[in-house]
Length: 68
Image (tube, rainbow, N blue to C red):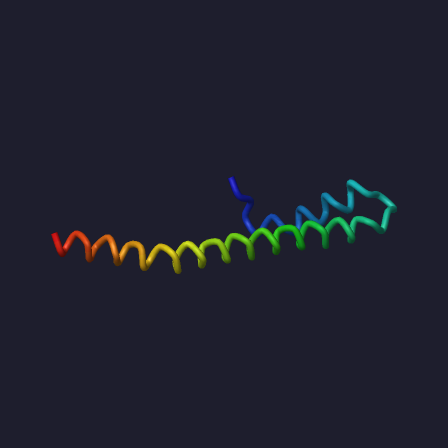
């Protein structure tokens, strides 16, 4: 189940607590943000590809059904 966006401040606080006195928690935060950004971009690109490929296929199938 996806976490709500409102949970982000809690995630930042959890990172600080997980790394007390360690400035690397910021690196972990940016790494987490980067991974999520790449995942979202990949998902969007895949959706776009499927839409571009799917529309002509659906149109061809509908045309074939109409011609029968």
